[in-house]
View 1 (tube, rainbow, N blue to C red):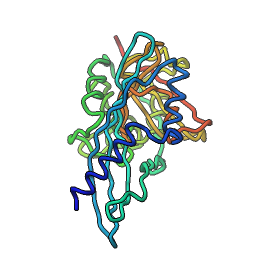
View 2 (cartoon, rainbow, N blue to C red):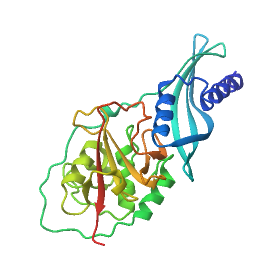
View 3 (cartoon, rainbow, N blue to C red):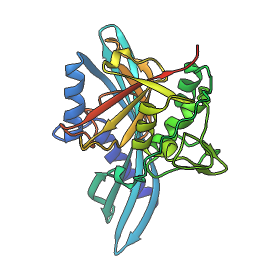
View 4 (tube, rainbow, N blue to C red):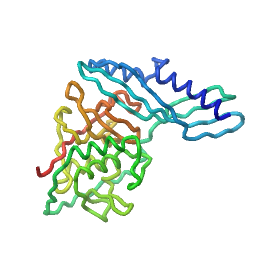
Length: 286
């Protein structure tokens, strides 16, 4: 039975990889984004993996993931964008009756914001951008067991990248102050998207950053924050890990795990016309 379902699911994954339904909103968004960037989708590769399977009344409920690789050409530059798409499907007598992407609920994050009582002592550090990017490349599709894993894990992942790059922690044990992770406890700014955005824009000691308006000003290892609804509360964070042929950032992220993704997220199911961005370049003492 499981083998039959696996074969049926394999056929479905092949359909998704070859995008037999171009009317799907996500496909349209990605193709439109590529067209605006004067880029083309050369090839799509995909591999599926079943994560859970339950049977009830002759129906099989399956959650699975697809590791998608997009080969993209832009001018004379070619690169591979990757993402892990989480999906759920329902089969009746081994026939697919329903299949859809699992929506990400960014609202499940805590709503606490950090306090700001900056001291006079400034912590000096040198930010190793290469180490931060290497970490983002190593763990984009996995989770470092040294840290807690969150259902909405994007900010936790970015904080890990920043810390590996040399950004110093401070504020422990007050969760509302500074930016830190210690003994399976952490500050709001470590794990909550809006709190990290607020910290980056306000901190004057330890981890600190400067806001820029042009994405092309960002360097490798810098951070982009996303307010998908445009309601003033930021939902998501990414780290810059590359640049495209036009000098625009490509980013890695968790929650919807992805690498070398075009920074504007126009192909995301969370994207809305009201989206707002905050872009921060990390300031150190180099």
